View 1: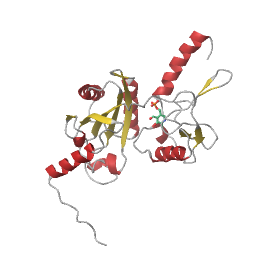
View 2 (view 1 turned 120 degrees about the vertical axis):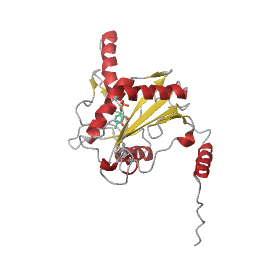
View 3 (view 1 turned 90 degrees about the horizontal axis):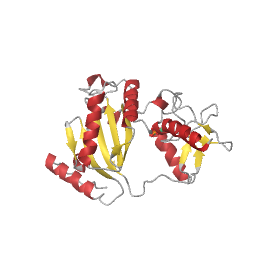
Length: 262
Ligand SMILES: Cc1ncc(COP(=O)(O)O)c(C=O)c1O
């Protein structure tokens, strides 16, 4: 068999090809409106420049943590709670922050502001950094921060009126990995694929002792027929410390007060 010869590109040609590749996606559901990278130390609104170096340990070792904050009507929903969780995850992953908390917060807000996005999401990552392809980050120059703003898809409202879930057959992450929001989402991705292949909204993990844990990107809660709210403890270390779950506790208390029982 004859292999087509692979072109050798200049930097400009490679960027031009990246641009064309991105343009071929135009009109699809989500759009990347802005990206911050500590590697180039700034914000870009050009999707073809929204790239991460291959020797960043986020790519080849998964040695990075991340979080997401929703952008609702121009506001970052519970940014501080999400930022606190990012910092805890970074410390569990033994990643030194590239900047202090206030600086990271300021960068995230400026990135959203530059994007002009009013409804969407902000995803941000702290990685052990760029340096080499070794396992240990000891050869990395500095940890990296990346953030990207994604416009909400038109059809992104959450499902109402109940969803079908299945029990996941994919082994769940043990503590402390379950409560560290690292970029190692292979079990989560496989679990979601399992749900999709069986026509379900999500696959829920049940731990070896038979206790319900969480879904691949959602916490799980039940309201019993008796009106009780039952939820795996988001601070118990078996599941991710979900910001939504913690918010549900606050809102549920208000609902109990207003309705005289949930
Ligand atoms: C494994 C896992 N559990 C739960 C959640 C829900 O967390 P939150 O409510 O903070 O989005 C997520 C969110 O990404 C997750 O990845």
